[in-house]
Image (cartoon, rainbow, N blue to C red; front, side):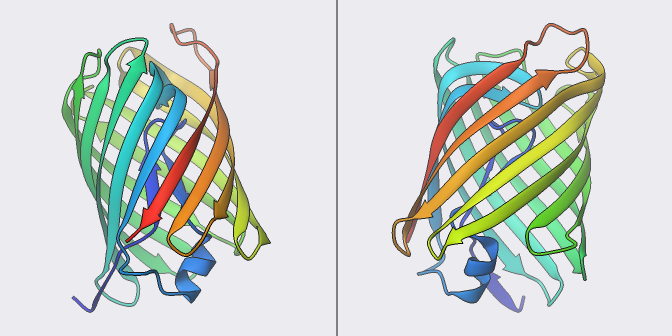
Length: 240
């Protein structure tokens, strides 16, 4: 192990698809040291949409994530989160995950493994195993594809999504994300699953605290029971 670096990052299933939000722009995180490098991120979501599936309203969540540099181009991310709904049921989700990523120029390839435990929902506990690839032709845009096997659902989930970000000042930036997902025997869903999008604005109050309000949507693409959803929320990141 050559180094350990904890990231200011959030990976929340409450967002449409598999959302990732950073407490500060990635370039800024690379250029400046983060105090002690340990961050806790809490969030609120008006509606909780996970992989196109609506699970609850008024969701609160918390997450911690870290990254270990195994070499100049190989990185291991570790994290855990907990989410609970305060409206539309007593849904809970607790998960832990690990991602191994290899970077080669504008490309990154990796594998992920996680375990999800649920309460008061139709989702079943199980492992989520996946492969992913990201192409980043420039500093502002990235295109990511992923394929995942959920042992609880005994089905497959795939996605293709793009993200674009732009600094507005030394302390704030906006990010737009849009994607489409596909499922096979994933809780009764097969074929095109949903199209999703999210727009967020992050403001770093200081080197230790940042806030990110966001709005998002999930649009059902098949004839399943899911409806089109529009949601909003806020993330608060505190670095220790």
